[in-house]
Length: 240
Image 1 (tube, one colour):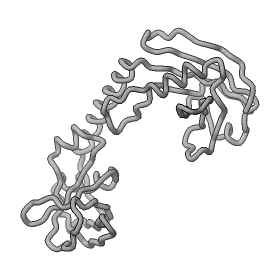
Image 2 (cartoon, rainbow, N blue to C red):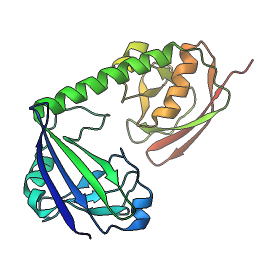
Image 3 (tube, rainbow, N blue to C red):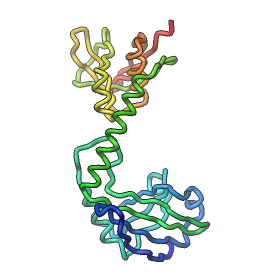
Image 4 (cartoon, one colour):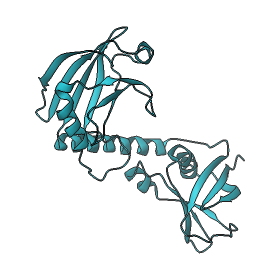
């Protein structure tokens, strides 16, 4: 797993942030080859584990392991990660730390970890949310023309659904999307405006529909296929 040279704790300019840095030696060169200076790395542990693993950026499923947090810092870092507060936010990365590669060679790298206080974590999340709200607001003000059909999956609100005739797409108020940038949602309603199904996730696809709608482009349901408790719906734009 590599040998460690300890740099230790460092006092950050912000009293709400604790900084720790250390060197990882004799690393897997294949994993290290996919890293560069400035990359964020991920930390992972569980309550029953006696290690904190460090993973290279963009790796999932246990692949891309760079190394482990040195024993000298293990307890404090593990306690901090597992003690993360839940502020009820969804969407942005809500980690209570940043871990970054600040230097690297062919077989080693230096990791800097910033541990955020609960106050600092909440401030950073709020700042990120406001930026994403503004970004989405600007995106919805742009001119846009949808050119190809898109297939979106909807989750049925109730079991026993069997009649897809007369379903219509319901796009919510523009302000809803701007205030909830991580909950992009579309609904399917019947002729009485009763909500029968809603989207979940699929932000990129949903935004294509939403942007076309707010640019006054006609949209129609081309095809509906039911699979268990879901509806796969192909939505096409009017290109005339």
